[in-house]
Amino acid sequence: MLILGWSSVVGSLGDGVLAVYAIWINVAENWVLVGISVNDLLRDFVPFIFWVKQVAFYVLPEKVVYWIFDLPALIYFPIRTVMSIFIGWWALSKAATLQEQENASQLS
Picture 1 (cartoon, rainbow, N blue to C red):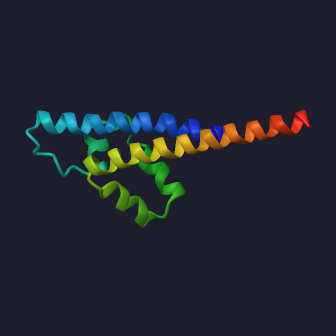
Picture 2: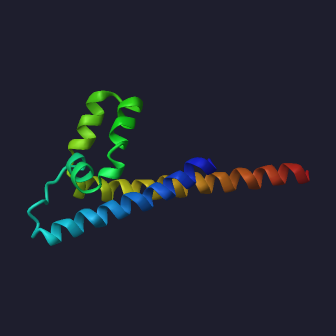
Picture 3: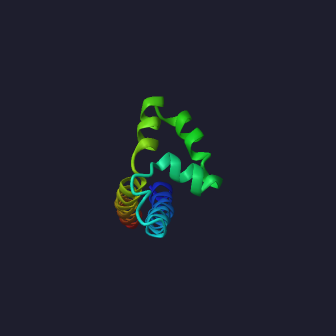
């Protein structure tokens, strides 16, 4: 649970940065790129992390990867940020509950 929790928290930070960057690019370009896809944003503006697409092909069905990377970045990254925060909060809360239960059983 701790690994899931902390990886979600760290991931939400990365996703949040990408969401803000996508907004910043659009403001700088007078919102011409408002429909820019996740694929195009990563490929054209953040190429050092474009490798995540290849990883996605290993862990997800091909059609799902194409669907995700075709989504508008201005929709995908904010939603993913919120989801990652929620998942991280849930996992860390669950880990704390499990730890409390373990401590209580050791005291009995």
